Image 1: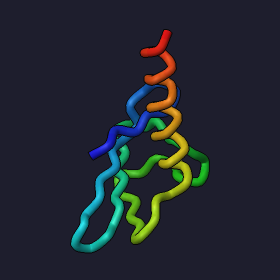
Image 2 (image 1 turned 135 degrees about the horizontal axis):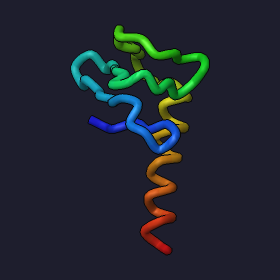
Image 3 (image 1 turned 30 degrees about the vertical axis):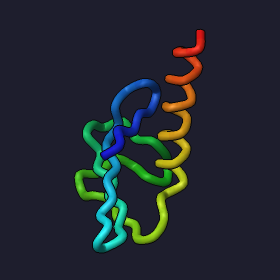
Length: 71
């Protein structure tokens, strides 16, 4: 499971099911990561690919963590 952040606040979590080859994103708080993926209680499901909004926020968070670790 991967934690996803927006504005340095936890927004939700991303998981992957190998058997169904399905990605699941669940918001944990009303902290939307994108206008195209508004907050909702129902999970966002996607087969075979990730939503670009999740990729962007996940990569951005890890990039920022690496940046701060270098300094």
